[in-house]
Image: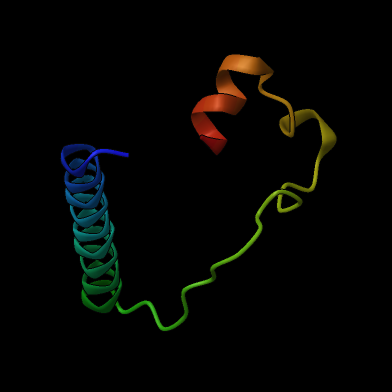
Length: 66
């Protein structure tokens, strides 16, 4: 890998880390402002109880789950 490619990769990684950190700070601050005491983090794939709402089609599932 060339030096330019390595620098570009590191820059992209730093920007990505900064974006994620900024977003997480915003989420936590909003939860504090709204009085939320607990934030659940983890695998939410089985959180829906009824089977009909689990499949929103290929397009809907991609938008929901990334």
